[in-house]
Image (cartoon, rainbow, N blue to C red; front, side, top):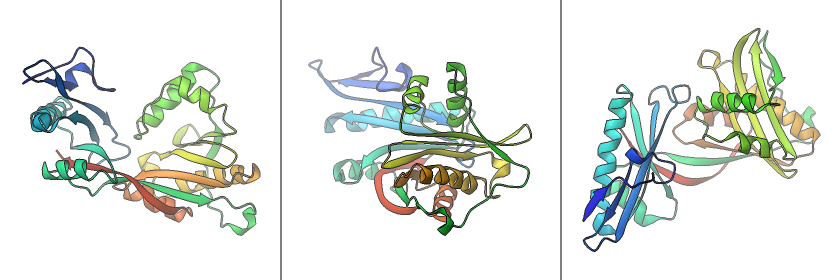
Length: 271
């Protein structure tokens, strides 16, 4: 059995963050990779997120897991020793994967949670959350590729999964598309992005600068979006959040979202 860096990275991982294993007959029996993001604005206490993907024959699992774990520690060192979370995605009903990674020291405290809000068609029945005094909300200018990439980069700083400009261009064609920013003078306060269909929309991201948190900014931006959705007669607004992101979940509950289900585990351990 031999382990090595494949010619191309596994999934979205770089080559140096990827491993493959072949048996004595030269048959590949496992491969995996690591992708990492720094999300200080979303998780300041544990800002380095390292996602592990791995698929291996049982005979190769421990060797591959050991190599990936060691590489995760190296990534943490390369990033200046930032507090890190190493995690992997696991379907709720995948008991075999759940058992393996918990046996290897991962916990199942985190997951991706789905929430839904029934958009009221009569906004007079809903208590309105207003933005802080002196702030102003405007549509984000996305007319050029450079501006679209700048917008996506700003969302990435808050932990939003990276997308290319082409993805945003396609979403802009959806029946529902809301991209707004809030400012106080020239001081940036926050962003919101909502996309979707006539039946249901998705709250892709609502992000607020750390110094503005706890002042009702996110709730106010969500309310602005709900007003627009109501005027378009959109039925539902969906949202997802990591279970570990307690502040985001509290904000969604305050805004009227109901929990629907856990969509997947994010099995992991702190580094």
